[in-house]
Length: 127
Image (tube, rainbow, N blue to C red; front, side, top):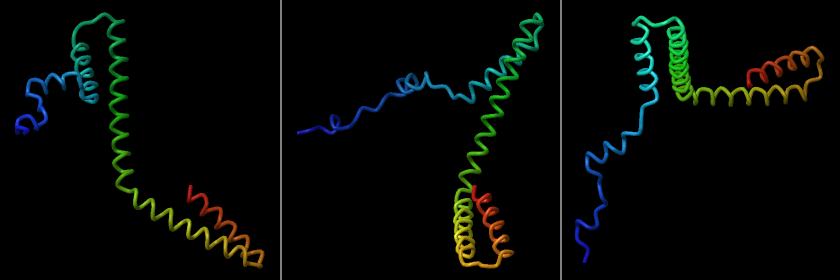
């Protein structure tokens, strides 16, 4: 007979959970913490070489934060408009198929030229 206590999986105690998560650091927070640290350091009187080195590092970190934020925004909009892009692509494919069909049946040179132009434009839009 199995006792209830034995059948239950072991749940880590609160102290063990803290220790398990101690090695994990939020990358964004870490970069921002580095920026704050360098900004505090630059408030002091420093030799020119060290100041220049830290200012360069600060600019690099700030650029990394901006790039990450921009990537997050792009990812958000990419998800948001995924369906819209899908429908637009389907409509363009349908339009391209129609233009190709008309191009095959067309015999008038002027109309053929216009259809070719329309086909090229649709193909460019599809890309």
